[in-house]
Length: 236
Image 1 (cartoon, rainbow, N blue to C red):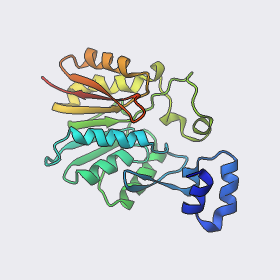
Image 2: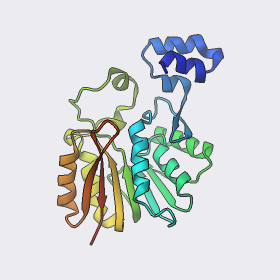
Image 3: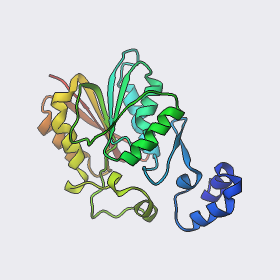
Image 4: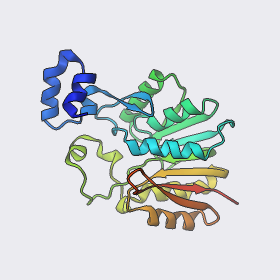
């Protein structure tokens, strides 16, 4: 479906001409329409949050394979943005307790609206993933991972929040910060699930081996065959 067809199908007919102008000015069609379908659920999106990607749906699908769906788990989503990961997991694991962090107050406003719209209870916290509190069975994150000198699509660079895209240390900063804290916040046999940049798997595995030396870690590919997910299981 082209962007124009998407606007015709999902946009407000009364705003069609205005929406065309926004499209011509390079605004993402998801922001123009105002929501996206993610894992069968509807999420509000605007310039305060990243647009959820299909790869993040894959992250959830793969993560669910490794969880005990009959157990009430403690889950934390770091860098929640629109809340799509936390909310979707809560929908599929309704007995679990889900906490979601984001340093952006504006992003959390969107996430809270989405939780209400999807009828789930999430513990949202306006907090950086550099300072995590609690104990969890699952740490899941699609953090900022683009290096500052990396070239990305113009429509993304011009429209989506840079705070949610870019990270120091060639994009590895937040993975390192999460892994540094994981020994103290991840329960034994707990799981870390990361979405990553396609060239970052070796570096993140190296960080995992260094910071959680007794853990088991592995890489999985997305539907394009690219390294896109790292899973780390805590074992002591």
